[in-house]
Image 1 (cartoon, rainbow, N blue to C red):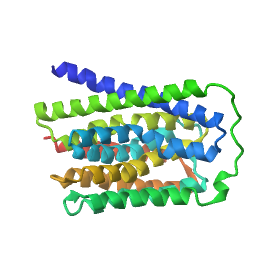
Image 2: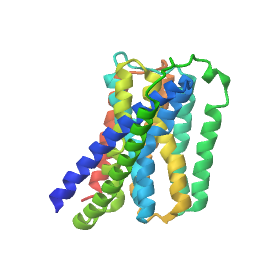
Image 3: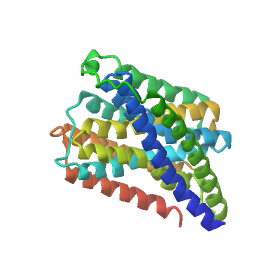
Length: 314
């Protein structure tokens, strides 16, 4: 039985990666067919669709009445994105990641604020419906800024295509269903490991599921960096921090408020996220570029975070 759950655990991660890649590619194709602006497409990918695994996992957690698992998954995933994700992306880029984009510059300030927000909200030992509403308000504040300035929409339309809409919409629906199946499987594996290995379920979320659910956006970021598309690479990773921490946590708090039994695990993970976001902010504002050496530094932060969490197991 244990071997089965381990195999299911890794298969679920592969299914999340596969289905999310198909989902994103189908949405890009649909956006081109419908002649959406380039900025709108990059926003949809960077700030919403890469977080589908987080959203579906939260839905499953609400349904099974284990909201703490989704909360810990988001906390861990955020840290992974801003350390391991951006570090690897910088290393795989040819000349480093250029960060002249005003969207990237401002979004990083927002990432820093969002990194602190959940730690403040759970300081009273619970994540309430009011906390959920506050989180969602932050998300809409971010949306308001993104869509409030006309210069973001001045780029030319994508070239129009006259076929493939039905095919890509079908791929989108199938991919969405597969993501739900994978999320449900991951949740069942997490519950099994927690019960049979006497591991706190929050740690499984932070260390295991948080890393696994970050694979799609990290893969997208590395691919974009190799093509010289730093705006998409960084936008995807920062969006993958902002959206789960505001929109997804907000939904979680409203539909399934919960108490925090062990705030230490979350505080440690959030501490590393705050530190990494501070250094990331400093890096992209010095020379308007994230170098490979700075990427290595972020990778070191990730391994320190990993060690700090593993120590709590013993």
